Length: 140
Ligand code: RB5
Image 1: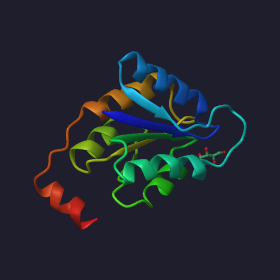
Image 2: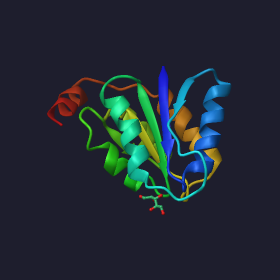
Image 3: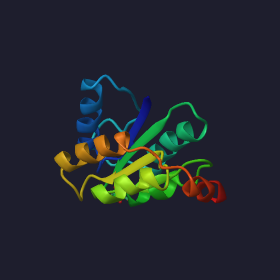
């Protein structure tokens, strides 16, 4: 599985932690920035990630801003993207089981790094249930 990751300045420290965590587990990660805590617009990085998920260049994306809100709003403008704002485990699990989410958005100012890594693990491992949920996704 190839994963693309992006953040703004508010999500930068957490992005670095998540990237290192995935790389340690031999997951292929493309980091589109930002690369420092200098203030930037989350829209630029949300677009970069969502575009590559939308066109199928990568399988999944992870986006981190202060809350995860702006990033999920941007990403969900792209065809075929189902970005889940999940700062809790239940949302991360259900976004995979029922919504086949392909982007995980998290809030670097809302949750700690330990929870973020747990969310990433859980989100990557939880399968889509298909069935009636497939029809609903097609309706989107
Ligand atoms: C940046 O200050 C903040 O607005 C951004 O990281 C994000 O939380 C927006 O939704």
